[in-house]
Image (tube, rainbow, N blue to C red; front, side):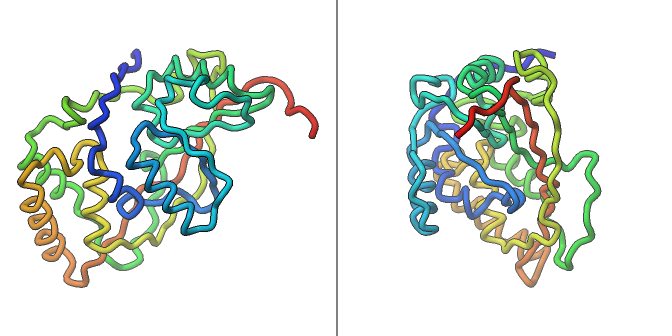
Length: 249
């Protein structure tokens, strides 16, 4: 199965940046990540978060991955993507990254993986009622998953299927334990939905307040304490290496 090519739509995550950090579950705290983004609001959130944490050694670049190497010339020892890799022209971008890497460098694709991973026991609160929330999204936006001005592409392949077709060859999958006792309040759950391209605030138009109200009411009915257990899975690193050794120094 060939990957679906995604044409960039600048409205895909319109209005989602303010909800992204609060709404998305974190990857394992044992990992670090660096990124590049075409959305100025996402970059602004990143700058604010870095400033609050006292991180000053980050260079922020507004560009698409397809604009590499010109947007951020290398070489690099490590290039990382979160699940954002699937929004790119995957094979093309992987080949560009291969050229950007030093010998022995690596491309790391970091994702949440539930399938095949043992779920831990709940720490007490009920799980997020995703099925009911997804039905509520469909009530407002229709059965087709939206993305920007169009529909979200149907994904039928894994990142491994893409990388094996490039000069990287077959990658290695490394699993890092997820956070088993991640508990989120109702506002964080709502922010999570607003952070998705398929339910970004702009898609609801003038009904965004109505949607938010129904989400809050649903969540209050499912958990009077207003807290939910979130199990996004273990953190999987799909690691592809360029042959060679790191230069000394």
